Image (cartoon, rainbow, N blue to C red; front, side):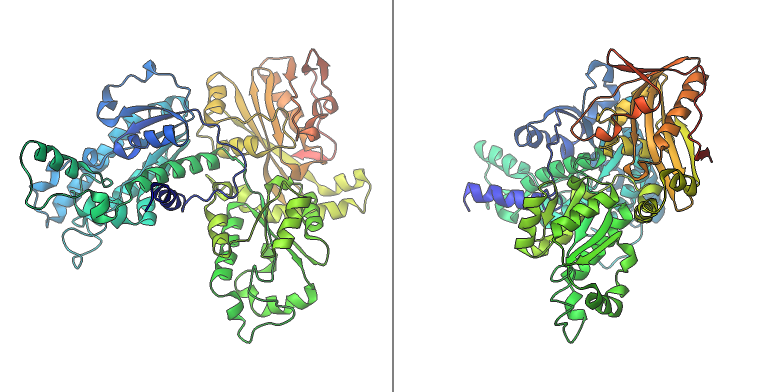
Length: 607
């Protein structure tokens, strides 16, 4: 195999878990802090040479004595790995009775103590500054070294032992803010443990990836005059190992996780065709004798993927050139057992152009076209949508790649699932119903009929239950966003450290509970940023929210509230916000005398 083909093969293996076909924007990562063992430190070369990202590394053995005050803290994130031999020292079991369950349990507890201690030392910047941090878990052995037929779920079994260490590590990480696990064990499983993981030749306490150390030592000894009867070959040739794919896969996984946390190119809606996409054949014209032949295999895999996306808060919709009355019998007889029509936020089964249907869908749901993914088997239909709506991401040419793209792309992943995310379809459907109602009444009658109520919550530390939604709203909202600036978890935390606060607003009316739909960051008497979900635009929620902010700032002793609006190519909806709320514009700053309380709009009350 040529060098070029080897590189292509390494990349293909390494990118399997992290498809990039939905990626549009660059990561813009400049500097990474790497703390740990070879699992993370050996990624430095990949980050620097392949991705052109600067790295600073600290070895775990020096972490207890390291002074973090001596380094700049301008990192985009930290990648940490704890070496297995620091958690499970080799001597801790070599002289134990390996059949003694009590000794094995004691060894496990001691290993957990080591994990806790090393995390506390290595996550200093996460704790002090809220630095986004990813922590690698441990590689689970491919087999129980005591024997494959011996008890599976006991601490005497190293497989179970390390699985439980991973569970303990995950619980420690989940208790920290802005900290996530990189599932190294899943990465080795995806690549193939026999091709990556060294526990078939090295001890369990090493817990690492194949290297050429043994070959290099044999070469050194040969130079000194000692040659084995049968020479030690390189691991790569002897075992067809692919360690290079592992290091690249770790980097890809971490960068993909970063994109998810930062909401880069996030997908809000997935619209899908029907014939030869959600099922095989044309259901309305020539259904197969066995309906399961139409959906078994890849189609049901895509159906399941859609349901997982919905559970993450991504709306799903149907856009198909078809006759609804002919499709409905097939759906009722077959599809409804796997996915109900009610799961879709919108159903556009007609003979209109798909581009027109998608454009209408975006309008109804009040989302940007660039947040929509469209799936279709027909290359002509895909090209038409790409030509008419270039912002929409279009897939479907690779039949076998649709499910992987939908489920594994960073743009469809979420770091957390909020209550609002779980109710997204219900809320969007209510929004469509609300818009239809709006057409039948005057504006005042419509607003009065909603019985709209709001509530607010102050957020002054990163452990607040609304923190995740606050950061999510600020970084996912484009149209009603007063500055368009993305705020990192660390930057939001810095507002709290300086005495500022975040505020989130919840809204509900007689049709639905919207959940948290608006957020602001306040420093002193200045609104750093104000954002609001598009699903409540036109209901004057933003005016009620600003009235509430005025009151909270007045309670701090201020008589003036200031703010700025920075125009972007997408936030025109927020351009008139401060003027409508009674602010005056002087020298680029919006200002308002808040010594007298501004009332809520008459159709809005507090919960």
